[in-house]
Length: 77
Image (cartoon, rainbow, N blue to C red; front, side, top):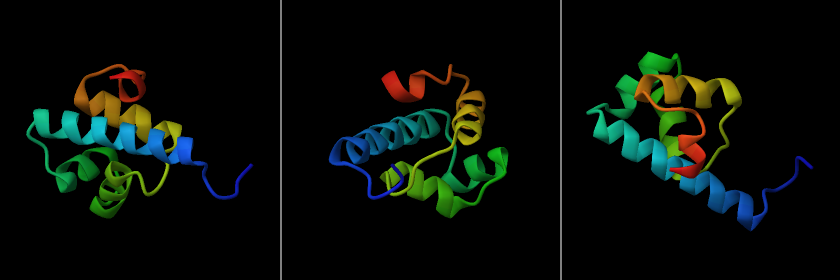
């Protein structure tokens, strides 16, 4: 269950990361500023946007709130 992510999981991580990047840029936020607003570091934001690491629910909710969208928008665009 917690082993290597499947190709489908990796693909979904990248999709979510792409949506985060898109929303962040639409709002004129740098990775550093978004990280500051959600209480994380820039490296975490970069890693999420690349799909390298999964997000937890708290981080997803915080990003959605900062970007002014419903959390489900990070999954379904």
